[in-house]
Length: 393
Image (cartoon, rainbow, N blue to C red; front, side):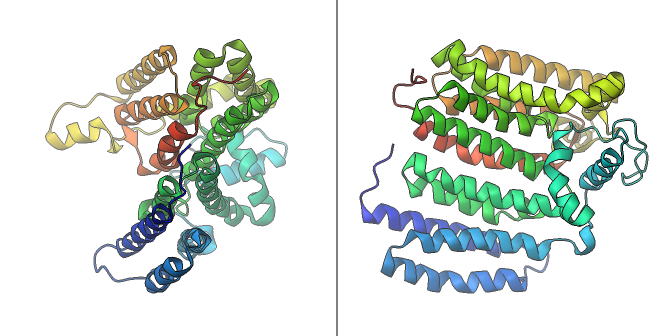
């Protein structure tokens, strides 16, 4: 734990967070570089809040401002009528309606996808976590769920302060997540990766917390459930969800890794069971289609780079095989590493995920909304782990 008795350290943390958030407010528009009303209003508050903080040393002023500011930036950008750039949440919304109507969302011909007729290749956890929003307000509520998840992620990053004991490490991370323009956009554009990232972050915070408490089996099982909910929401969460089990195995043995993995994989199995019963082949095929759903080259990957350089690009089939093979080998190697720190295992999970993203032919920037909160939490995990480097007995 970091000792933070000195007032100047607290002051640095607050002022650094305000500076980061203020600079991100200034970088929130492209082209004409003119501010929106929300951004300008938030920016005008910064100097006055800085003075108030320096006079009172109340870190709660900075925390509240950044959290509310980050939420405001997302709410003012929320698309009218629930429209968005991505069709993911539109498909999830349609899938929830099909399921509640007694149908099978994995053999349904979707009309909300672009183009129509595309599959909904996400596990049933994606339907579950967006169900409350659907019941509240249909597609509008489903998309607003991602805004709520962004708020949850900001709160979870802030909550790491109780484990880390240093606002100097926590507050800049919260400010980055709250104000990064692309992360704001991705929480309102109709994609679902913001929610998956928040669920992964919840699982990691829960695991770090129970490790400091003594890591009873039922507590590890509960942390595994949160990781399992993230995995049940999107397949790309697999490396980050399961690699903490390798750390638990190395440091605590069967008593540690088995409850965690039982919670993660058990929840995925329970949520999958009804769809396996009604159509196992269709369900598995739809989930596997996630790897090769897009036929064009797009986004942040080596094939976009190769295409721009005029180099050869693999066809869809060989590229999918290469992506799956690299990710699989990377995961196996990562599982075998002798972890002594939870942060190292999570960092390896981020690395395996990036390997899969960069090797795929389609890598939309939305995917990084899942990685962002996890990456920001990695330094906190290194600080918050038990001093013994082992799961306490």
